[in-house]
Image (cartoon, rainbow, N blue to C red; front, top):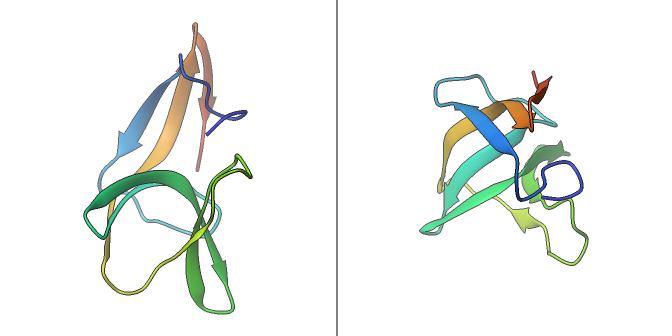
Length: 82
């Protein structure tokens, strides 16, 4: 998920947080766990990778939100997400 999340960062996940459009999430979909940005367009929910080399995923009703990213820490520099 670079450039926002590099390989050395630590993320804090809220497993009970309310998921809204534009948040970074961990989702289980078709037996695979994804770390992506959740976008809602015309009522459709999509998982978007920040790296354009990876395709987006259109979600149907068979997904589970495992948690939302609420914070990242890179070498002591902390950023919070809503």
